[in-house]
Length: 342
Image 1 (cartoon, rainbow, N blue to C red):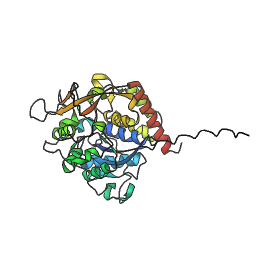
Image 2: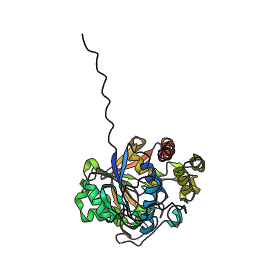
Image 3: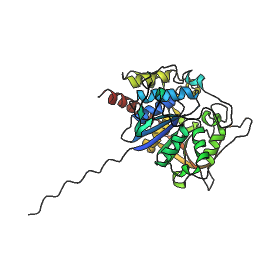
Image 4: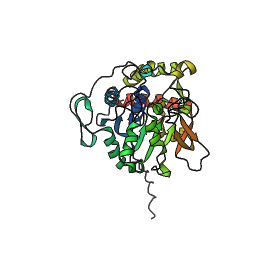
C-alpha cells in the first residue's frame, strides 16, 4: 500500500535583520525607533548610537535611552557618540524639535541607575553603555549589521577615519540626509548634511563601500512625498495606546517647514527604517554623490550625478506614500498592542 504523501514542510521564517540606528532624537528619530521596535519579525535593533544634531548630545543620548524604554527594549544598548561636528560650528534644530528634542514631551526616565544591555554591555548612570558610540559602530560592523544613520554623519565618518575597512563589514548603510533639488536649512542644504558636511562627504565619497552594498540615501525630495496630516495625527492619538498617544503628542510639537507650506509633517527618519523592512515601497536610482564643503551659499549641498558610470549610492526617488502612511499607523498601534499584552 502506497503511504499517503507527507504534508509539505513549512518554510522557516527568515531571521530578523539586525540593525543599528545612529540617531539624534529628534521627533522623527523617535518615530523611526518606535517603527523598528514595532516590526520585531523583520528587524531587531542591536544598538542605538547617539550623535549631536537636533539638540545637543546630552539630550539626544538621554532621549535615546527613554525611547528605548518606551519601546519596550530595555536590553538594547545606547552609546553616546560625538558631541560636535568634525570641523564645522555646532548647529541644532531645537526650533523645530523643541528644547528637549521631543516637541516638549517629557518621557518617563526608566533607565536611571546601572543596568546591563544585550550581550553584556556594561552600562552606567542614565542607562548609557560605557563604550563610545564610534567604538560601538566598529564592533557592530564586524557583526555584519545594517546601519541606519538618521542624524549628522559624524559618528559614521569617525568610524571610517579610524577603521576604513568597516565600510565593507556593514551589511548595508541606509542614510537619511541631503537634498537633490532642495534644502531645509539653506535653499541648497539639508540639516543632517549641513550640520557636518565634512563628515557627510567622508561617508558618501569613500571608495571602501562594496558595489553590491553601496549606501541607500533618503533625500528631502523623497521624504517630503509622504506627509502626516493633522487628521492622521489626531487619528493616531485616538487609538488610545500609550505609544500612539506619545507619538502623536511629539508630532504635535514638530514645527516643520513642510507643515505650513504643504499641510503635513515629514517623518524623514522613519522612512530610512521603513526601507529595511519594506523596500518594495520605494523607488531608487543609482548616482554618484558628492557634498560641497566650501564656504559660501552652496555649503552642505548634496550633488547627485545620475548619469555617472561609477555610481556610489542608491538614491531613493519615490515612495508609495498612501501605503507608507497607513502602514506606519498600523505598526505603531501594533506596538501598543504588543506592550499591553494584546
